[in-house]
Length: 490
Ligand code: CS2
Image 1: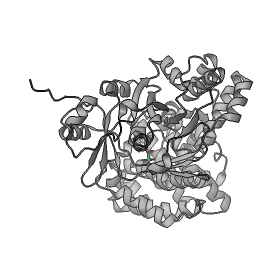
Image 2: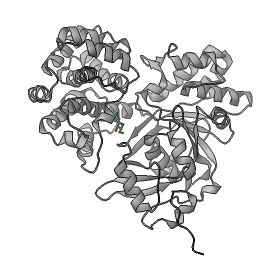
Image 3: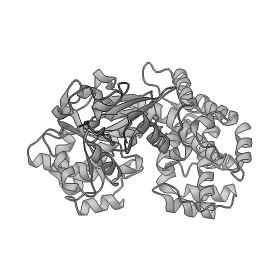
Image 4: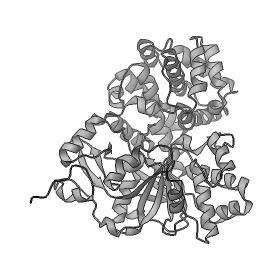
């Protein structure tokens, strides 16, 4: 009897894969779950999980239990595959690799006890997070006690729904069992991500149990980290290519550019994977890196997303092939942002900018502007407003910096006018202001500046308000022609 070739990616399918496809270089059955990852989306699976996949070949103790806090999609797609999935590294000839680091995938909404069990398991010594900016439930950088999820978790601390609530309940159980805490490592695009997470966790615990808060503050660890790799969302083209090359179906492959960087503050409290041996930069001073990346990569990304969307452009590479936009974004980076970046030691801003522009131009990557445009209310403050505040404090011009912010406002206005909801936790408030916007720069900008969650620290700065009004007016009715004209004369 001939053996059937598996039709779905799973451990038994591995040995049937074509030899060109890289697969786990270790025995998965001998690994132990040592990491819980909160937010097991495409970015985690294309980035940290790949470093961990390499680390597992050196030390089997760090396999991952991936948790989705809100959705069930990843669990439903990957559980039948026993956590295996394909990573496509995009280049002229995309390279496929099957990643084995995810040993377990949980959907917290259905499996809360299993998640809490893992968080309080002695073998789990590291919790990593990619929950996006909004997952931290912050307002002006500090935990927002009015956030519905935080309010829920304070009222029901044993049945949390937020990441902070899960971490604190996990830590409480560990303290009770006299286990050491895990390290909580934020891998989100936020300046001082570790510091923000530490303050949020300790502040939350403080409301529940003073001793627990002290125990966490004294014994816990919340290293900062900077993560970087461009990861376009999975699309049908990727699914079909992967199926054709694998000879079986992977329900949810992921893709990213070949380039990846992970810089982590070496401040763990309970051991760590051998990250330095798998390409991670461990440093004691990472504050410079996270800001440089947010300001010089993510801010121009958002600029392309809003200004490019207004110009009806679909992807980053197409935006970079549009001369007026490409020229603007390069000037934005070199003339307006770079002077406001306090560089980490040995950092060459000009070369960093060159490399980013090259990455943005990569035609092998179909990175949709609409994906980057999500969650503007969370991204604009950390990507652009900090630079604007620093420029104002140093007496440097802010006119170029205000154009992408105005682009976002015009984008919100256009979506509201077209009746399209924004993917943004502030959708309601934004769309309301967007619907009322008439195109009168003074009125519209004043209404937008009233959105405290976004503009609070700068809202009362008259220089900012005036420059933002000018930029908004320059974009006219937000039509492709008006935007192109504004960019050409910026
Ligand atoms: C992008 C980021 O979607 C976005 O907002 O700016 O995901 C960006 O691609 C990554 O941070 C690159 O490391």
